[in-house]
Length: 445
Image (tube, rainbow, N blue to C red; front, side):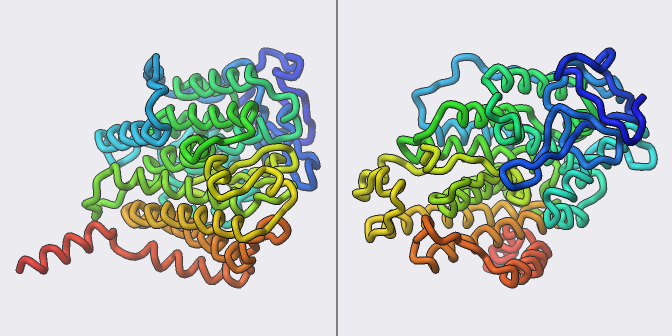
């Protein structure tokens, strides 16, 4: 047992903690440090319950605090066809996720708070504290959800943030492909009901209670692997895959939790495509906003999706570090070179190129609207808020004459505040599929 004010090292650091297991009433992981001018988390310290923590990312043994039902998760199919376009491969993943959700009952079997075991309740509460500290607006929006959906979304948020920390935290320079392999193995244990710590336990209970599939989680880890090795994207098809990995996946993770409105007559596939589109749109918007920033901010998701994307994860991956998150073939077609980007040249060619990229991002936002209207009403507000807030960034890029090298596309606070009640009103509207059906019926009578 640890005292409330005492921090110790985790098992992964040097196996100093006896047995590598933690009591459900005592241990959660964390330590805050200064990193890159922002508050971040040292992933190898632990502190008692009540700390606001992301947690230890390197524990080597499953955690014994909560007994969870075991799950059977199919392994990915071998010999994935690499010849097909990446967009088609992602589409196949979406179809699978939609089919799994359509076959599952629309109610969860998560325990009510009053009947939930003490350790498991503490795990969810800890996830909520992390979400509250690092994604305040999103946390506020989750308060409209039912308690079981809200807790599950918090658990997914925390896992996504912890995954980000592997390649974005204070130890990012030391992260290897092997570390990501270990993280994926740990993910499989979570889905099999063998959590490593309290925060894992919350996710393990979530995936046992909702029809959440492991594939989007694996794919997000694959996006982290891509960040370790890839610095150029030859075509939009390659960039599409990356945006799916690091942001679109969050939509696929969360739709089963948010749920589809019982009033919706839309195909499940439509809702999942909308969730994917919002993640893609938010990620493309981040990329366009931060082309010239010394620190490229990659969202994943979460106030961005459920945002359907991970919440603001700062990654030092700018053009100055040699990474360019823009389609190389489209740059060449526009008559632009890497030197133009490194030297921050705002030319007519650059403006024309940017207008095309903005048009593409807006098309994904429009597709996202189709899915957002079909969600359960109590789940729509954070989604609409993400959509409206991020779409405003594109307007600001245009207002800056497409100079995203030396001018940041900043949305004034007043505009952000005005978007929130608008998002709430949009969340109250009937599913578009229902209104379309009503109009069709009226035309026949």
